[in-house]
Length: 290
Ligand SMILES: [Zn+2]
Image (tube, rainbow, N blue to C red):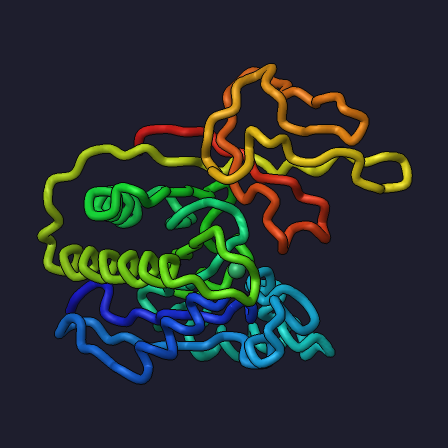
């Protein structure tokens, strides 16, 4: 039996990120048997949020998949209960029936087609290498600051889980170029899984990979009002290096805030609209060969 037999392809975890929603609907209407040994299922995760064209109804669905949350009693919050339903359908997280969950997202940041991986293992490293080989413009983002199971993301209810994060695309908007990138990325990943199952992955070369560091908040005054914006040097092209001493914020008073510390950073999720509420300006990453 192949190691990765069941794959769930998920769209609409965030209801205003349209690429995944439209791609999943397309694939539901035109089912394709990609590979004989792989069973695909298609899921639109947050139907209410999709109908309302909003990220979520009560709370962010993609932060509700902590084991503690999934074990807690019923809640008044729509997404908390929805997480439990999806956990039963795709997971459960402690003993997943689904071998791989591919959760499709859009970002308003100019991150291009980005593969987000949550664990450093052969399966994911070879996936990253295979993807870069067939789609050189793809970015690889490794978020392994906590163990896989401790992440709150929907995709972690699968035995393995990844996110496709593609932008820049405004919320509630759908761009043909982003759709095409997403479709292409998904096909390459499915091709990789097939090769992995057959133990036929071609020889690979290390690829540039970004490893999540921390989130950086906007500069604020004592009344929690923003007093500066992300510096123009960081805009319109995430993952561009910023060296120590270079500006990261353009302050309203005309001054600049410079990068402190001792290492170059690779900002991403720059100005992400969904993170405005929590005052997150961008995330940092290190770059390494994986
Ligand atoms: Zn999203």
